[in-house]
Length: 294
Image (cartoon, rainbow, N blue to C red; front, side, top):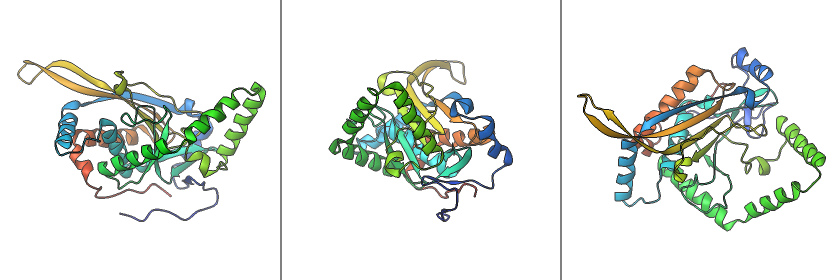
């Protein structure tokens, strides 16, 4: 695997390095699309559920009861970022950055049923992680959350903030936005923030819902959200015209179009679909890890 860029340069941030050699069109896009809402694009797609269900059954027969669809989806996303690193870019202060780590934010229910107080939480991955690494890191993070009651402290802080006069609350949020755009928020805040990360991934199917189109938050730097829906059964004709029942898993993606063009996004999610259709490939580290531009 290639050596990752680690040297801190002027205008780099704690959570990412500024991209200086990308196309001028991408350098200009944050000035023409000022917010993530302006740049948000979305699509819905589906994958065949049969290979996923077969792989999950095989894992359970081998004694691995903890692995879930969510673990597999996150592993496919991590592998996609390893091969298409521009998916891990973000915009801050009108500049485009490459995030240093792969920080996946799990929405409530996204941990596969672990008790996480109903709050979003972040798990950090590396490009070479396998699906077993993903399971281990999520399990370790949820166990830490059960032992750490800091989530309750965040709720108490939020309860205090909403009781303050509205003009003071707006001013405080304005200060947070300004600090965030300059990269001056402390790592202790951004590492636990549900609005600072590589992607938000949620499993709406756990609640028997179709995938939802999650928005990109104005505060923070989220380039991608992925929502997984319930298993959908349909009757389709086979190659001989006879009706057969097939199952599909729908997913919805919202992404910041300032990070890459449509051709790049399309190639990235072709990898995503490939790894969902071939889960065995995620049991081994990638043959290569691509590095983003300087």
